[in-house]
Image: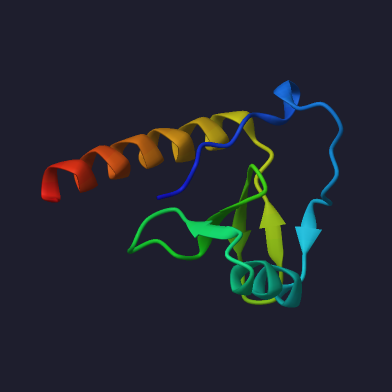
Length: 86
């Protein structure tokens, strides 16, 4: 289950760039640091408190606050749905 991400305006220092390589996120996945948005949506992931969109050529950090809020709402919905299916 993905954890919620905070809007950029609520963060202190911003240690990660806006773009990461597939190799960077693959290494993070191997280390168990990546959580997909849901079981069916695996190209949007949570990594170190940020949402990332995995594209064909790169991985882009979500910075739009309304999109972050939407992804967080989806996470809450997906987590609640899993509780009822268990």
